[in-house]
Image (tube, rainbow, N blue to C red; front, side):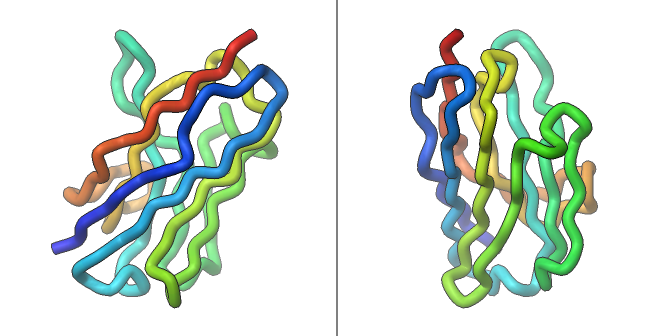
Length: 119
């Protein structure tokens, strides 16, 4: 079992930055790949970024490539998403996910954190 708790969401103007965090408890974070997904109003949940258990390989959705950075600190059992150059289309609830297979989510989800980007 893995319990995930996201934090760091909020309201930001277009062009601004936010850093999301996901604290993992239970099964050791370092044993699973992890990722971020998001869901905008009226849309399906979509893949954002993924990172391997060692942190040695990352993969991004085309829509965020070059703007977002996924990272992890296994000593702290924490996953991060640095979001730069935010745009209104990035507005969504962002979810942490564990034991994913790159773009295919695993069964472990956090409760989500709201990110709102104003124009």
